[in-house]
Amino acid sequence: MLVAGAKSAGAQIILGSSVRSIASDGARFADGRIIDADIIIGADGPHSLVGRAIGSINTEIVDTRQITVPLPHAHAATDIHLSPDYRGGYGWLFPKDDVAHVGLGIEPPLRHRLKPLLEALHRRLIREGRVGQEILALTGGPIPVGGLLLSAGVIGGRTLLLAGDAAGLANAVTGAGIASAVQSGRMAGRAAVAFAQGKTGAGTAYAEELDDVFGPSLRRAVRRRRELLLNASPSAADMRRGWIAYPEYWSPFERPTA
Image (cartoon, rainbow, N blue to C red; front, side):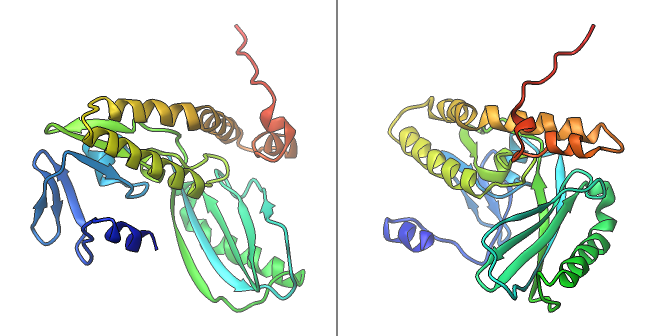
């Protein structure tokens, strides 16, 4: 729907050829073509090529694995599973009509444990009668958890903007990033229009607006996550302080002692 709307508004849509790099002469495609542009918006995920071009790289990542399974009984809640075994992440059950997404995230050095840990979670939910045994779909991927990056830069006289995961907008605790991706994409589009209208500071204004909107919550999430990672054997109280749904998460940070 979004692509169709963009096309009807006059956008040129290129399918079947990916961008391989962003250089001083524009965007280089896999098929050899180079497209020049005054402004380039990188909405290309946690390993953004556009971000790499301006030195904004997500260095803190959580690896995830998710299965889709039958949901035998209606379930109106989102279930979160916190465990010291899920270091740097958590497990989840997200209901979606008659199926559920069951998955977990973990620190990259422990990615070899993703499959067995998810299988164990799935078996437990089967025993509890929560989900079915059949695996209908499998997916996974990286989520940036290091917080907001520098989201605007210049290369070869061109303004580059980052949105969504490319800008590090996923919440470092929950991994949620869809809403911020949609909102930042809209903001980046408006900045591009302002730039095209001659407002040369539109890129800087966009970066400042991103920080105003998302910065405080992202910085809290990053700090809570890092606090939890410093504890090799986190207690239930530690995990409550590190999860966004508990009041402890929102308590003031302790000041460092001399």
